[in-house]
Image (cartoon, rainbow, N blue to C red):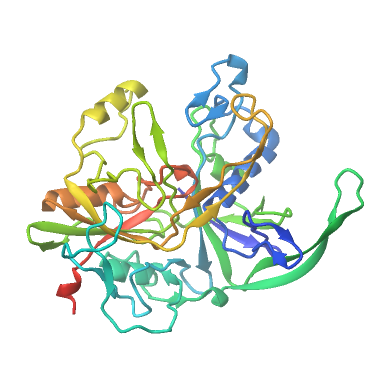
Length: 450
């Protein structure tokens, strides 16, 4: 994937679904969700005009509801995948990427919250088996919410990308961004006059000097070819120089710059792939989210009912069994879609179970859709989704060392690779937009760390 840095030319506005008006500022200074940046690149590809006329056309529709009419195969850029944005400090010989802090750790870079490890009676919902408890006394200190790549790799026990990237840093929001407040008057788009009662306040995000929004993006298109950039639409869009990208609300502009020297391992923390703690015949694996994840309620014909929410759809809500398949689940060259799905269904599930979780309040994900002749003829507001925030921790017990290694390969964003490719996005919805990236580590029961 391409490593891209976005430099804002002004303040940025990223509002959520809460209303703006009067004393409510709309929370427009929040760090942007992955959907915002994905939509920004998608719009930039469309604005490029004739450059991308000969790209692969896609059918209209979504969520398995597609139009088969030939004239409706007019959607473009469906191959776009992104990850991020993440804060990046560019002050130094090597750019330092930052990621949300794991929920079980403090500013020392070590975990202080641990599953209890016994089946003590509790009011936890199924399929949780162990409560997560603290190994240190209560404190009013608030840990810094952003960790550098080096701090994450040290926490996970993973090999570092380089000596410069290995430096551990811990930052708070105010270290790289400020919130600016302003007031405005709503305008009626039909008359161009002031909208009655539409006096509002708003918050804006201003990045500090030497800080950027780091994004990973790619859009390989099988019908497109460029003499210099091949079939990668993103690399062709940027074309080796700064390109204006409109990100967020109010048409705020960022300059997107391709990191030409960023080849090889991606600047994301590397998850553990082995060496997991063994206890009572079980191998202990934990999975931490680097980006939010959405697991919706699932029900219907041929689909097992699952409430989703904080619990991944690939975990049995009654037993905690991991439903992900073991073996080769990748679609092979020349393999039909239905044949591939049937082959994966016949594979055995990974021999592991979920036992505990550490999840904070959900993140609200909203949006607005343009009219779609297939499934949304009038457009309008998209369904509101509640996402599990980045930093959430899920704890598992695998039945063998081999099963633990296979579970890590299925959950780590890089799979079994050495970090050169994003293989797994474990969010049921919007994985292509950067949701569901995570890394694995090991854990110890509370009784083993006191």
